[in-house]
Amino acid sequence: QVQLVESGGDLVQPGGSLKLSCTGSGSSQRIFRMAWYRQGAKKQREQVASISFRGTINYSDSVKGRFTISGDIANKEVYLEMNTLKPEDTAVYYCYVQTVTNDQYWGQGTQVTVSA
Image (cartoon, rainbow, N blue to C red):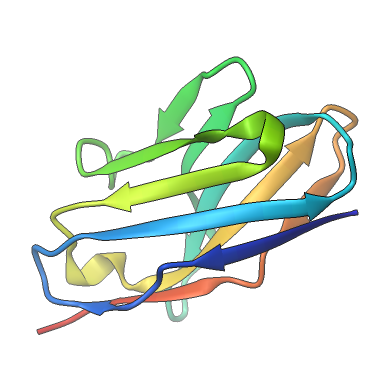
């Protein structure tokens, strides 16, 4: 089992910035990929950004150029720096881990609200 804890969610004005953090503990399973997902009200959960143990990074089109994912995958740490935030970025953001044996774990989520 891997336990994930997110932090950094907050209320921010449009155009503002936030940095989310996720730290994992528990199992010593090797990590294949970590990612951030989000789920807005009445919306499906969507992947925002991911980073693999090889350093391969992917972003959704909606955040490309505004968000930056980074981390120390081996130590189960991942961050999401979010700039130029928009009201449509409002959502619960979840940290996600996939191990090399395809076990998958989720954090409890952290709320990001972008509003004037």
